[in-house]
Amino acid sequence: MRRAILVVLFLLLGAVVWQISTVEHWIIFNWVFLALLLLDFRKDQKDIDLLAFLPKGVALLFCLYYVYQHAPKLWYFLASWETSNVKHFFNWNDTFRKIPFNNGAIFRLYQPEWFTIFMRWVYGYGFSLALWVSVIRSLMTRDLDKMLRYVLSSHTMQLPIIVPFYTLVMLQEVWYVLGEPDGMARGFTHAQAQLWVMNCFPSMHTSVSFAILLLALREKGSIFRWVMATYCGLVIFSTLYLEIHWVLDVIAGMVLGYTTVKLVDFLYAFAARRIEARKKNAALIPIPTAVSTQDTSNL
Image (tube, rainbow, N blue to C red; front, side, top):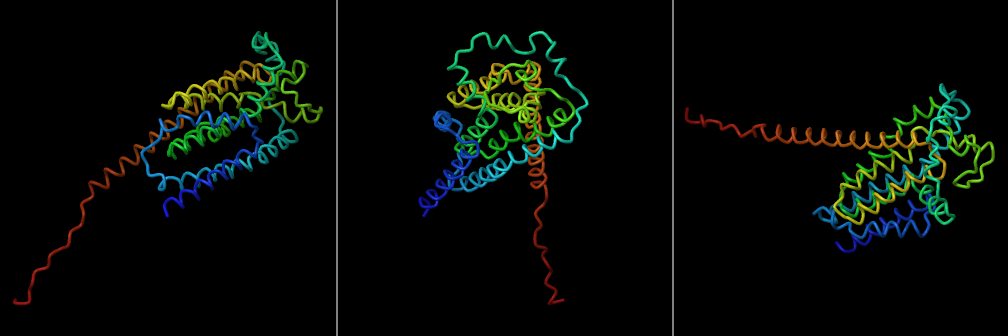
C-alpha cells in the first residue's frame, strides 16, 4: 500500500511540474537545467519520512503553480492599467541617459551572435526559471520551509515594494531610450513598446535573481550552489548585455534582493522564537491532577 501511494504522489508531482513548464513554454534546455541542479539534492535532504512529507510538498507546489498560472494575467492587467491611468510623477529617461557609463555599454564590447542567442534564453526565462528550479529541488530535499523561503524572498516580498516605484517613476529600457534595436528582438510595434519597455527601476529580474543567488549559496550541494549562482549572475548580466536595464537599475535591484532575503530571515527567526516561547510556556503549565475526595460514608 505504501508503495502504491508513493507512486500516485510522484505521478501527481510530475503532473504539477509539467504544468509549471507549460506556463512559460519550457524548452529542452530548461529541462536539462532542472536535471543538472537535481543531481546533488540528497546533500541537503532532511531526515523526514517521504510518505509523511510528499502530500504536503505536492500540495504546496500545486498552490504555488496555481498562483503562478494566473499571475501573468494579473501582470498584463496591471501593465495595461498603468499605461492608461497612471501619470508618473518622475520621468528619469533623460537623467539616466546622461549619467556616465549608466547605459552599460562596457558590457557589450563583445557580442557574437551565439552568445546573444544564449543571453536571450537566459533573460527570457530568467524571471521565473531560477525560482521554480529552486522550489522543486527544495521539495526533493523534503523542506517546506525552504520552498517558502525561496518564494517569499523573491517575487512575493519584492512585488509590493517595487510597484510604487513603477507607478511613480517613468523609466524605459535602454535600447528604447537610446533609439537602438531591441536586444531581445521581440519585434514590438510602437504601441506594444509603449506597454512593455517601462517599469525599469529597480530591475526585478536582478532583484529576484540576486535573492535566489544569495539563498543558493547557503545550500550544501556544490553543483546546485555554483550552477545556480552562475545562472543568476548571468540573468543579471543579460539585463545589461541586451540593453534592457540601466546600471543603476541593476544596483537597485541587487539592494532590493538583499533586503528581501534579510527581511525573510528576520521573519523566520521571529516565528521560530515565538514557537519556541510557546513550547516553553506550555511546558511550564502544571498538569491538573484528579482531586481526591475523602470517604465520608462512615461519618
